[in-house]
Every structure is written in C-alpha cells, then in structure tokens.
Length: 488
Image (cartoon, rainbow, N blue to C red; front, side):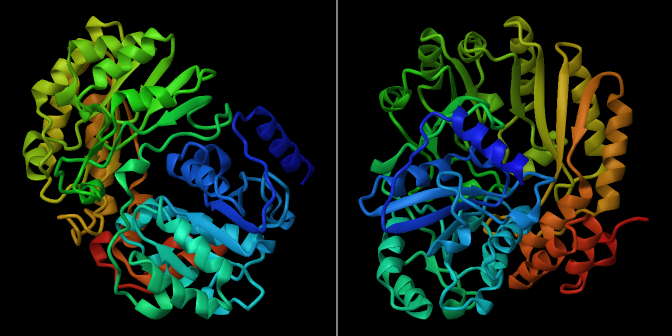
C-alpha cells in the first residue's frame, strides 16, 4: 500500500495541468486500465477538463491499479485520495472489449456492486461511456446504470445535471432516458440501442489537460486535428463516424492550443494524415523546435514533403499500415493502399534517413487464403531490401456496426499457422511481432456478443483473468463452433 501511495505522489508531482478544486457535485472519473494508458486517452482527458470547468462540479481521476498493487487498498482518486465508492457518481470510459475485465476490477476494488441489479440506494450511480459504445456496448449492460453512446462531449453535462437532481436511482435512469436521446438504460431499453451522440463541431478539437512523463506517450501534448474518417474501410468502426464523416479542425486553431511549455506534440485521430494541411502543420510545429508524432499515417497520403516534415519533427521510424496480406484482400475490404504506396514509403524512409519502416497489418480477414500470406512475404522481402522493416500483425476481429459485422473468427489454429508461415518467410529479413490469436478470439466473442458476454467477463475477471478463465466463461454462455476452439 505504501509503495502504491508513493507512486501516486510521484505521478502527481510530475504532472502539468492537474486540476484541484472542491465542489458539491462530485464525480469519480474512472479509467479501467492503468494510469499510463489512461492518461494517453484524449477523450478521457477532455472529459476531465470539461467537468472541472463547470461551476458546482469536480471530477477526480481513478485508474485500474498497476499489476502487483494490493487489492485490499481499495480504489481512491488521485486528486484527494478519497474512496471512489464514496462518490455519488462514478463515470467510467471504456475504450475496447478487453477492458471489461478492468471494469469489473475497478468496481470490485471500489466496493461498488459490479452488477447494477445488486446496487442499493447508497451506492454510486455508475455511468458508462467511451469508444466501445461506437461498436458494441451490449456487454456493458450488466454493469451500467446508464450508458452514454457515441460522443459525450455535450451529453455528459446533461447527465450530470439530471443525476444531481434525481430522487432515486430509478428516477435517475428514467430521467436520463427522457433527457438524452443517445442514453441507453439497459433496464428500460433492453437490447434496443438508441442513436449515437453527436457533439457540436464547435467543441472540437479535443486536447490534453494533463502532460506527464508517466504515460505511453511520455510528456506529449495531444491534440485532435480531425475527428472521424471519410474512408470506407469495411472493417473499421470509425467509418461510422458521427456528423457526416471526417471533421477538419483549422490548422490555426490546432496551433493556438499548443502550450508554450510543450516539447512534444501528438496529432491524434483516426485519419490525421488526411487533414488537408497536415504537411504544413507538421512543418510549423517542427519550426518551433517541437517533436511531432502522428497517430495514423495513410501510405497513399505520404509524399516527399510530409516525410521531410516528419523527419524534422523528430520521427525516427516511419509508421503506416498495409491492413491486408495481399492486394486482393485490401481491395475486398476497401482499403486504398497499394503496394506502390508501401514501396514509395520505404524509399522515402531511406531517402530521409529514417531508421526503419514500421507496418501494421491483419491476418485472418474473411476470404483470406494461405496464398495471400505468400504475397505478404514477398512484399516484406522487397521492402526490407530498401530499408529495415518492422511488421506488426493483428488477428482480424469483426466489429458490430461495420459491413463485416457477423464475420466469423478465422480460428486460432488458422491464424497461428499463417503467422508461423509469415515468420518462416520473413526470418532474418523483417522484425515481426504479433498480437495473440487467443486473445483475439476473446475479443471477437465480446465484440459480437450480447449482455451475456458481460457476465462472462465478470466470471473471467474474478477467476484470475487468464485465457483459460475467459474460455471457460465464454463457452459456458455461448455456442462456440468447433473450428474456433483452441488447438491443444
């Protein structure tokens, strides 16, 4: 417990932008992953600032404790050290499916009944939201008093007003459902989901409140030059972007938000490189002596000017995505990338002195065959002859509300066999890393499942959170085709 408290003190001392205030409307803003991940979340930081900017409200942060922290210490906020379970409102942002285990853990540690049906009048109101709601929020149902779907930049404020005046939990649920079109109340709406929330474009961009060295993106100021995506890749949830697709923030607005003390700037979004002035934006930041990072770089948008700007901005690895083992697969999922784009990226990386070219891709996409893997091997070998190449592979997981919704998981054995084929073909030529096919199988079940998968997450988390625990919990609640089973 002493070590955990010391870690919190050290993190707070290193932060720039921490908000400390007192107000009657108290909200525990919880992230179901550890601090280093949470404080790299632009959405989480934006809501932290927005709640605290309101008169009469204060938001204090809490996170899934680091591995090894004593569970008996409970869950306390960073700002005041108060127990999360003592706050009247606990708002949790859930980014992706596997964070369901973290959700269970933070509720358990806070002493809040994990299942909404078990909460008593004195327990906090648990309000859920976050990026997961864009695809499949159904597994959140067992844990949520209410869920804000989609963008909550505006709806969160309406929800806080409703909750502070509600007479009871049931009254709060009904009042939220009446006041917010995009609020899903599982006890009232069953599995019928309302439309996604959409924030006014005038509220853009999101940007960092707190800068800290203790994150995945160390000491980096994050800002969102564009929200959403105008492309139509069939596997991607962001094609479901609200407000008509990609929303561009003027370059001048982005630059004006960068604080004088910032040394590193991260340009964050699903399709940042599609900003019409992205090269000029990077150049301007580099001219200020700042290091610059992009969260996404589309190879068809990469040219000599942008590559040069990124190198001046401190980039040492040029990172982009292939997202398909072959041209046939990329065409099938409406990915615009061509091999010529990737070959040009490799040439630009060499020309401008980058250390390496890093590529992301998927295996197990519907319709993929072993021959497609052969094509990826050949491509990797050609690129590695130009510049050192690192390849990161993720097994394909079908998401709700995309054209590939309902596509089966390729199979753990299939994905692992193709990964082995890829490793053999690229051995000694390409630095290959891959995500786990087994955990992708779990993610697929959660991405495609209903509220019963929330109960599976509860069981798995409380049984230690191993893959075996997840497999038992999932297979006890849903039919799993034999070909998806783990190969012994």
